[in-house]
Image 1 (cartoon, one colour):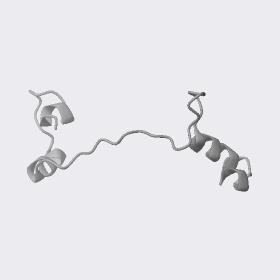
Image 2 (cartoon, one colour):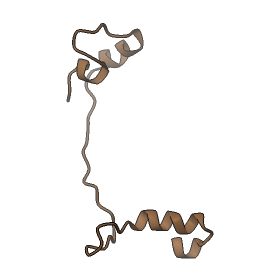
Image 3 (cartoon, one colour):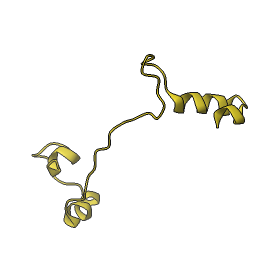
Image 4 (tube, one colour):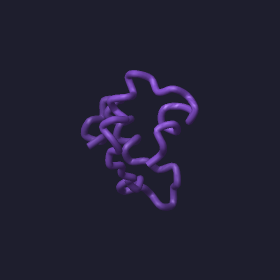
Length: 66
């Protein structure tokens, strides 16, 4: 985890009142997840099934979006 200064400003800056309760609570767990697009076409690096589904839904093609 980063230092308080790196999260809230510069190391030598005073800590704002609103941030003090968060700092007092202590570190929180953090997770990094792999970004995977299910069903993406390996031959087309611009293939994005999620965006395509949203575009279809927005254009009224609910069945195609599903």
